[in-house]
Length: 186
Image 1 (cartoon, helix red, strand yellow):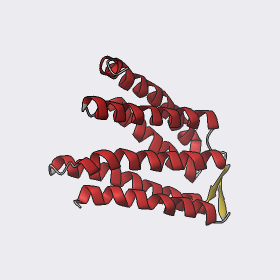
Image 2: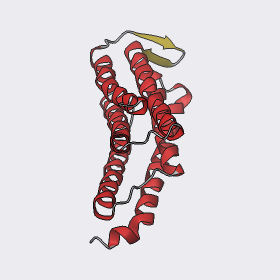
Image 3: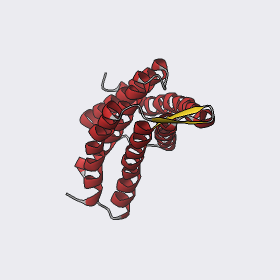
Image 4: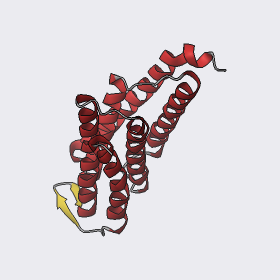
């Protein structure tokens, strides 16, 4: 297994660590002005940030060293979705993110993943990530981190709604650009 794939697997293994820190981390906190910072959520944010950084590194290494594999094409986006969806579900349960926003994000992720599978299976095409999708992922990851560490000055909330806008736009863009190929398989 090459280094990018090892980083992807590491990201998947960090998901339960992230979850356990939130579930069993306790309620120790500190007041910072008008904000309350819970230590378990700070540690969870650190684990989430480390997992998110592996996404950047595995893609950069895979492309730079020509180590792109079928496993990586499948597992890398799956690991990203598993990580962000898990975090968003926990944010809703902690009342740190509105459920309707997270529902739209999760539905888009599932729809685009389904589109990718249909295109790959029926047409042999790989639906590559485009800039709006990359911006969406970046906004999602930073919003999760800021929401977990205390949402200082509403940075996490602002990033969450920015992520929502890019989530909707990039989802529409993927379906719009694939419509001709997709329409032929109906």
